Length: 158
Image 1 (cartoon, one colour):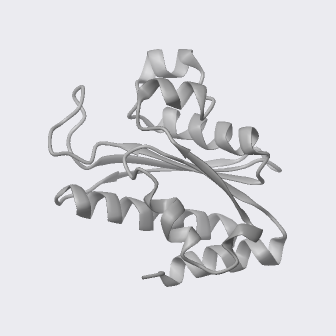
Image 2 (image 1 turned 90 degrees about the horizontal axis):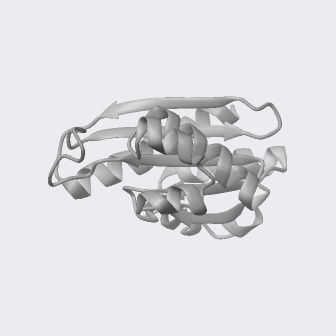
């Protein structure tokens, strides 16, 4: 079911005449799916990449190897680079990225529920990041991440 926040994001993009691309790790395409449930989303949502594997964060989302080497795949700096990279790679006005640990086990010292979200605006160069520490099962963490990411984007668009 389409959420109000998804419709709000697309409406704000339409008003601004801007476009969006996404880079998703732990959500595995859930954000893109939520967006494309809205009829007419293709006017402003260009698409994105599911960068589940660390190497794809570099090759598809444009994360510099130095960032991955220093911070790893689960970090605010990585999410920031993903958002910038996917926006540039897709020639979109905005990039939205998520990375984290959905579980059921921790990953390289990062606990289940640690999530990093980033929204990048190419016109201004501004990137907003947010760390979440979520509780719940894998499905709940993925869903809450997707909705929090869309909310962060809506806030940036307002």
